[in-house]
Length: 609
Image (cartoon, rainbow, N blue to C red; front, side, top):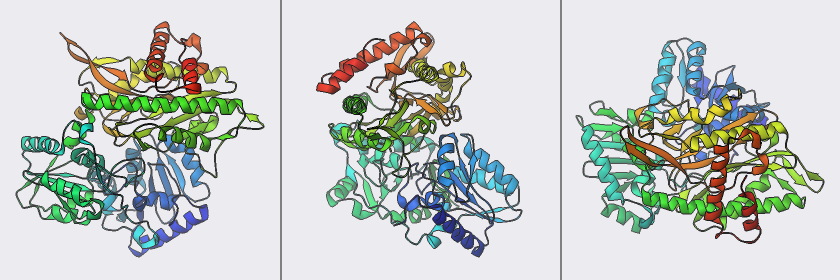
């Protein structure tokens, strides 16, 4: 099987092969996407075409090829990483803002050959993105072809689709059974006047049917589509992935199973005059083009997106249990790390990943990491999505001595009772005054958002400036959003809310009770260090009165913040009080779950500032 990241020579050979295929089909340009038929963020190996072509392993990026140009559009999270991975491949790194799509479309409108054909795989092209892409090409009288998958012609060892089994969630862990959830979807359909609703997004399907899988690393989902009618529901999935008892139970609950590859055929068999509900941001162009012309399409956000984002009180209680287990694992890990550094053991960024995963694996209910661990020492921390490899990683400590600086660790776990995501930065050896200043500014931003109170219905992008304010005041900014939604033993990134200036403040982005959202401001100094501090927050009721209903945040994450990194004089007294109260809360929740060195570390790390 081909590896996702290979030598520069192999990448150049693949680009040459694709160009030959483009020429054979009369295409002036090919756009390689970072997506699949479900528009997932993380992809099965079969759909990692952009990664295979370019050698760039980040989760986001768009590769554009012409006969004499190759460019990879990436946002600020990946600028440093892309430059390193693309070296020698002939592919240019195009630094885009977080509004990466707009930057690419503007470039296409100016650079695509007049009256030419541009190709991309329609199976992996989002319907809403396709509209913007076609509009950009029309400015040059260019045409978009989406009926080809050139990768099938040149990727001779392309991995097959995954075959992991689908399994059912324990009913005690879900606030509604699948019949209740489907009934809620049908209520929404009736309100909109739709007889059918199509769902391709994998986390929506997993949530709706109370099923999970393992088709994508770190994400407990499975490849499938769902078509819901007024009296039937069809699950399109490889039948061999569903054991007979589960298949029979699904059928009892009104869900029939059909082969995964018959999904588009089912859409094509809808009767003229019927009404179909789709989410244009969560369905591909190829699927929409399967729908007969006589079917009326209603475009609205999937009802599942809004429903699954609002965790019930019972689900939040389960998430708190996952946070306790995760916090205990982190106490064990940081106690080990402290001792390893004192003994001058060999510790690398790869060691961090191994040890933190091993500690989580010992905790009750742990299943897998929720994403690939980011362990980044000093300059590597300046790349927000840095990934250490066997070929390129930093040594933090060895028998010759330990380094000095900041170690950033962004990690998380998938537990049966919830999904975690946490970033901590710790001091290794001596820190400079500037490093402590950056850390304290980020901490102030994190605290400010943690303490926010706001009217119910406030659009999530509007909260972003709260975390940035202390950082902006110092003339500093960061390129990524401040927070993303988090699933309930589901994807570590989910919507509809996102605390980000790059997201349009649409009505569906409103903050609602039960949402879990990350809080992770940062400062990144290329070539020097990076700082990011992240907790997960639950949106909970605050108060109601003359001016309506207000919401606030409950901090869910349980792990000390390194006091050694703080410049005490930069914190206000109310911020110190928040930090001391947080640490008291962490200590009380975790002290009965750890012992020995981990307990001693917990008590030292949560002492009052």
